[in-house]
Length: 426
Image: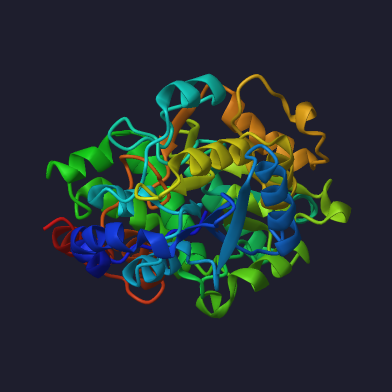
C-alpha cells in the first residue's frame, strides 16, 4: 500500500497521455496465431514473492483462453514512480498492480470498471472511487495506523491499554520510568515516520471533521488551522518527552519490525500490514488498540486498497478486463494478502473461514475494527479515493512528520504543507 506522488509528473500527464495512445502497441502484443500478450506491472515483497505472482497470474490466465501475461516488476516499493517511468517512455503497462489511481485519472490513462460488477462483488463498492468511478477493485482494506503493543512489557510496567490521549501519555511516562522504550518508529523511512502524525491527524482532525480533505480542496480549511497544529503538537510532545527510541530517524522500517518483535519497545504505530510480520511464536504476546483520542471515542483511520488498474488505451480491453476481474476475485490471492500482508478482505458473502487462512489473535482483534460499526475516516496520505492528496503531498506530509523531530516550530511545518498544496493544485 506505499504511495508517492510527484508534482512535476502531474503537470505533464496530459501531454504524455496523448503520446501514449500512439505508443500503446509497445505494451500490448498480438501474435500471428491469435495469442494475446498483456504487460502487467507487479512488485515483489517478502510476502508477495515472485512465486506468488507466478501462481496468481497462472490461475487468472486460465479464465481467459489464449492469454499470455508478461510481468514488469517494479525495482522497489515505489510503484507509482516506476509506472510513471514506463509511461513516459511509451511503455505504460496494460495492467498495473496497486498504484494510486488519482495520479493518472485526470489524464484519462485508466479505464473504470463496470459499476455493476463492482457493486455485485465488494462490500464497499465506492470505497476507493474517484468521482464515482472505480479504477481499482476494492478487494481489501487496511487501518493506518493501529498501535500494536507488547503485552508482556505492559504487564511488566503495570500499564493498562490506553483509551484516551491522557492515558497514552501516562503509559509512555510509566514505561520510560521503568526503563522500557515506549514507542518504536522506523523513522528513516518517511512513511513509517509519518505514522504518529497520520494517527493524530486522523483521530483529532478527521474524527471531528471527516470532510476536511474536501474542505481543503475548497480552500475552507488549512494545515495551519489550530486543530491541525494541535494534533501535530501531540507528535512533537512525544518527541520532546523522549518516548521514541534513541535515533528514531535513523532506524529503517525493516529494523523497526525486527526491534518491536524482539521486545525492544512497548508500542509500535504502524499500518495493519504489520500483522503479516507477527512471528507465530509471538501471536499471544501482541495486542492492538486504535490511536487514542482526547475523549476516548473510537476513530478508525481506514484505507480501501485494491488490485489492478487497467490501461485505458490497451488494444485488448476485453482480455485485460477479464484477467483483472478473475485475479481480483481469486480467494487464493486474498489468502496470500491476508496471511502475508495483513490485508482485510472486502469480498461480499465471505468470512475469514472461507479463505482457509491461519491468522493470529491480534489479526482477528484488528479485523474487528473493520467489521464493527464505528467511526471510520479515510487515513490522510493513504486514501485511494477522492480524499487522495494532490501532487507530492503524501511525501510532503511524511517529511513534515520527520521535521517534527528536529523542529519545535510545529506551525511552520504545517505551513509547508499549505505551500505544497498551493503548488500541487495550480
